[in-house]
Length: 105
Length: 221
Picture (tube, chains in turn orange, red):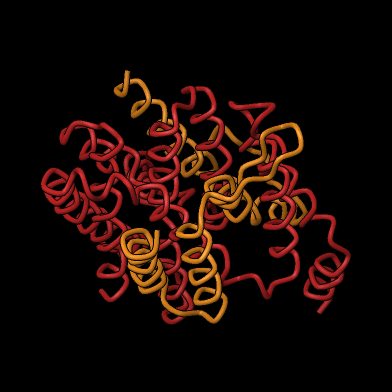
């Protein structure tokens, strides 16, 4: 089944890259639609990572994933906000995550 | 070249996490060979590990890779006259990094170079796949320890990719709205919450009054 997933994803990413190179497409989107698209990756990535840290059970309870996740995510957020290189952010915050996990919890 | 080196850690991470998520070594490599898109691959791996349906993974892949439409539109005028096989090749190799270096090259030299685009794109492709292979090898060795940190490593990666631009007001709005919507919708719509939350975030950012003012001032100036 993973094969189907890989094939589908390959077609989707290729279609998005090649679409406007095709001679069959005459349509050209305006600046407004381009601006809408420019926010896509920030929105999707956020919609994926936030539920890893915060859970909501659908009734009333908000749950945090745990001190290890929360503190390490705060560190990652702060470092990124101050424009530390992404790979350093991931390394340092993941190290903190494992330190808390093994020595504090 | 420095940008080629910068893709290595992400390729290693992608390869290793694919193995943790249950991909075979061959499938993990094939993903980088065929899909060749870091954020889309990492998202899909997270969603697979969390048991999401294929439909929801495809839908989030559509939204996440829709930014490539922007690059495709920008390059269109330069590639229209090229033969089909070259257009197919440049399309396949069109990534964030290739777009960035090609634009920089066009600005420096005054003209778009198809050869430059293909060579730089192919270099990223090579580095991305070698790095994935290294990640696959690493993932096969440390399977127990890392499976616990799988979801955090991905969260940290995505935080790093989004928070660097939080000073940009519409992006702050996009992040706040899509994050809040995702948390609230997740228990109700296990399969579609990511795409809906992303569209809410994009719409909110688009409607930001500041962004409109900035965009209009750029157009008029």
